[in-house]
Length: 409
Image (cartoon, rainbow, N blue to C red; front, top):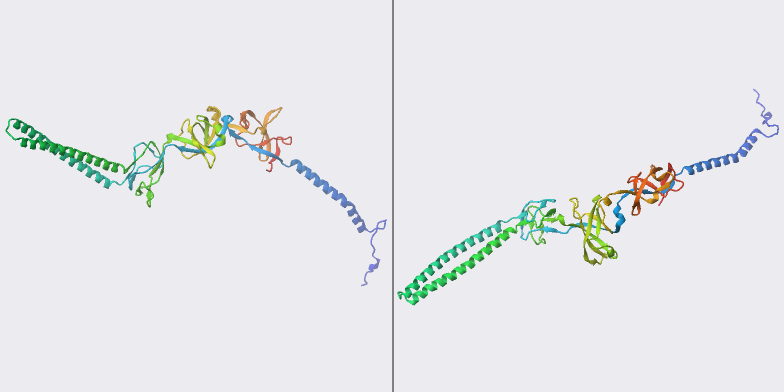
């Protein structure tokens, strides 16, 4: 079989004489700038669209609560609730605790026995003192009988002497017996007084083993348990100085430090509002009771004592407190919380007052009704609630439904 003659094969050409592959390459080169321009236009259009739909960075504030009395605030300070009448109750005697009748939170009356030490030894000493007193009284009674007899004998001797039936020496001995008996009576009366004093001392020793409440109050802490050794000098190893700590809840006050540079704003009997961290939803009225007449050199402050207008059982010692000193007294209505917002979040237009509430990254226009000023804030009567997030100073880019994002700080 003969081989084909490849030399006869030739490339097809257009009438212009150029090969087909050359024409395609030229077309591609001519279209390349067009494709680049189209890609740039598409990218630019996508960027413009993305710019148009990108979230607007805005300042966002939270709707909060405020109180009308803040309009009369002249100074704010912090402090703690303390009991002006507080005691670490201990015993004057040393002994082992054998009974404890109270626990933390128990209310006790003045003079009530709250604990007892072992008292067997002092009770025995008291019984011995009482027995000695009975002996002394018996001896005194016997000597008084002897004195009475000596006086009768002296009287008879005087009658006999007047009749010359006895000598003067016999009568003198009768008088001497009277004097001796009288001296013995006085001595035994003194002995009885000593014995009575010994009994009282022994009874006091027994009484000192009973630990009583010094005033009406509430037990705050318990420092000892049954079996512990209690001593007035707690430096002894494993000995307890106090059994319980108690306070008179009727004497609760707030102690607040006031800077010496602000003393001109505070005076005795000035009205204040007290808020407690433990009771954030409540406010208590009070007045400045007294000011400690000295300055703390380290802190440059003056201790100010503030009494409550009305004590509440929920107020406890050592609670942290915030005190607002007022320029004038306030009413109960001024102590009620009001919804408040930054005034810059409120916009006014033909439709009325409104605010843009931010929910899920979208600003939603909400009609509102506002009241008066509450310090630096504005009262909101309707339309917003505490905790809502609102746009501050919304510009022309902010409309109902606009996407927003918090501005970077």
